[in-house]
Image (cartoon, rainbow, N blue to C red):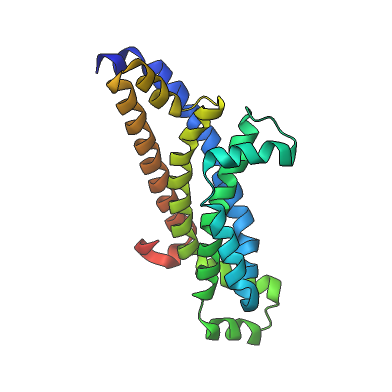
Length: 212
């Protein structure tokens, strides 16, 4: 407990860095998964293959992905860009299936009604399909956010400072309080972001009720 009190400034700085590094992959994962999920939903012949390939991305060990990305993209191994891209890939792997399932959950007769009153495919997607699929997409985003916040800690293995530093430094110096501080900080961030997403979902999708 004494260690925590003496190092509140360090914990606070690392928490801010952790949030910043997690936020962009979560947002990019959502934006990229919407068209990919739509393609998986729209073209049933390729749905299974696409979702399998995207799902397999999540099985790639983080250290292996960190090693693969630099030569493929021409970026530095010890760079925050490497971490952000890797976390985005994992986020897309989770979110794409949620988006595809969310769009599939929209009742066909609703789409038929929208077509009957003159909605084009583009307008129907944004004003009918996606809003009705929103609660399922939000559920996927919550899972993705928690996963990304947790995975972000591995950035310390390539020299990126975040809450993962408390794990490695605490382990090396045998300071249990430091390790526990890192665990608690990551859990608190995940819970706060999850709750904020729930509140945002209720504000943006009042038709979904409290289940959103």
